[in-house]
Length: 116
Length: 114
Image 1: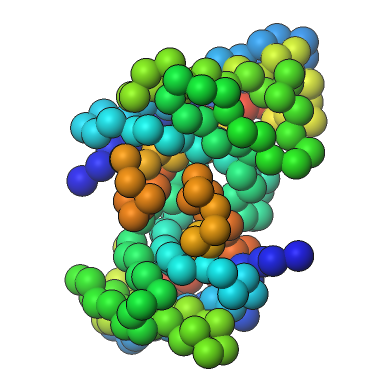
Image 2: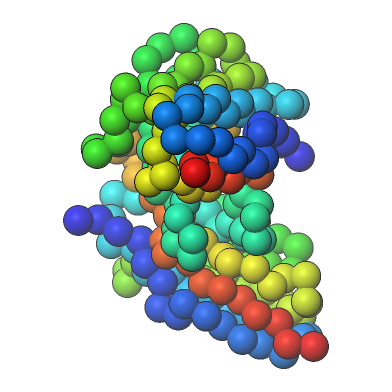
């Protein structure tokens, strides 16, 4: 089945650090990737939609300068949390979808980000 | 606003019993629905999907039912096993969103008692 790899799985860093998270589709080409944020015992909240070769589309309330998204190839999207603060601590999950709106999204295993 | 929600936050069943997890949606423009399973510390795992032109779809030990009249979606798991213990999310996607972003429900925790 479709495999999405997310790296790193866990990050602990100091406040003010920028953190990059990678999302790769391993066995299919993902024209669209999505980035979600999930707080403990809550559902997934969409942050942004990443389309290969174009600018990401951010959801309302998500700061694009805070959460930089790059989708340079059909198999890789990156999310950079810039100047991270403790309130940015969360579980960040990416998903990828193959070409075609009828394809389901497949998720990575998430990145646990802890800002001290 | 539009939302996808669940009737029960926690469902506890005995091993071997059938489980039914429910989901209500409010966006009448939704035409694609998915059930995901999320285990602790992991990303959601695709279980089964259904489009609005269907009212039932079966997979291995799972069945999804869609009632468009009352905007209700359910996931049935046959012969529930301990490995089925997880949080289950329904998600929907409206046909009028070109990027096909998903809106997730709040989740139901399934606890399987041995």
